[in-house]
Image 1: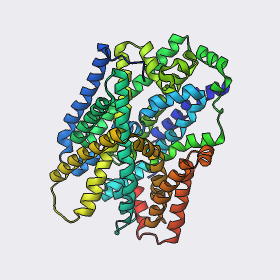
Image 2 (image 1 turned 30 degrees about the vertical axis):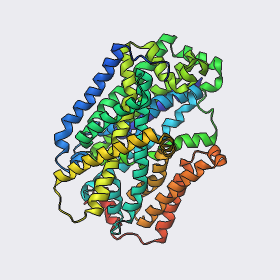
Image 3 (image 1 turned 135 degrees about the vertical axis):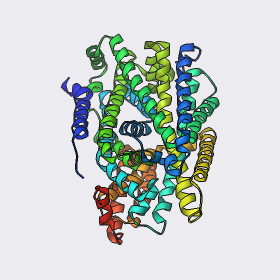
Image 4 (image 1 turned 90 degrees about the horizontal axis):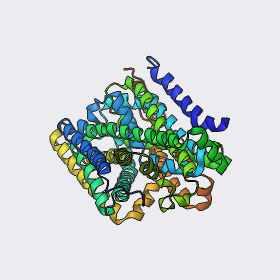
Length: 30
Length: 495
């Protein structure tokens, strides 16, 4: 069942977390 | 979608007519702004806000494939269908935040309105080689793409409201043409925002209602396990299929109707925020489609139970059976939202190729024309291209179907390596780009045509890799443009 939740919950949550970290990073490389 | 027609229900019709009316109103609202010049008509005067760019870039890339195709694929494959969305979501996040920012800064500085414009400036090409070579796949694929969207709209209208498919194509063409021609880029982007809201609404509400009605997610998963444990395994796919799915993301940096959205933002630093918003939208829509397929399979275990025995009918079937007719009307509108938000962007890119890239930059170079005259001719070209797309959509369906097979992957293979390298590699040359466009398009078509190769891996993966090899190889053999290092500095935002 872990593999199933990996696909339907963990991967989208991981991508959202990644977008949040990158998206809210101040400044960024100029 | 045969068998799920609710066209006689006034609620469904009301929701759909309200949706179409809103699109037309936005087109009219944007007319004045878009009439002021070519930059406004084709790129919104580079005044778009981060939220608008986010939703417009995301919906331009997501056609009816996401709603109908992805839910159908999840119905058939189960959880392993997720890999078809992971590649493009991550690639688009990268493009928003990194590649798109560089593209926006450089194209703003050089006053580039189109991708051929950009490549010509970036490669300091005074021979028109890159502009000419890049126009061929853009025009062919974009017109075929628009034709396919019009045809899909006609088919969906026919299935939903029981009208003749030709009238369906006519209505789709008429509405998209009207607001794109009148509203230009601003009209396209603002309608995309509303369409994105329709799409996310439908892709959240439908699986949520269906899962609750079935008895909850654990019961859905237990039912699927009883049907076949493979349906619950995200890794129940071959390496070739996995690479092909992930490789769908290679198309994103090569499709000009997505790239020009990054070029339109007012403040390039805000693309970071667009990346966040766009990714949230991409993830929710994609997993919404996945959940529709999963709960649909749990409810209708055998494909023979679906209308026309077609897994792609699971979305309208669930909508018709589990939602209030007005909400169902909105979910049907979401299919059109997906179709129209892609068709409008593609129509505008095709029109910009004719007016900006061919007419203004080649045929009428040096000729004095007012901005208003150019906008007039752009609107005329938009009508002309829409009519061609309508005609081939109606009379040459097989040709359209064949060309569209290559559109996303073909544009990706032709342009993605060249575009990505142009943003980071100063040794890139115009000959390298021309070779990449040629090799990418050729391999895409040849690989697809050989069944043994096609069975081993989707054509866009080898086509993009070989295109990249050609771009790098030929660039290294030819002379880099003078000032390329300075161009890359400009892209970083340094003067």
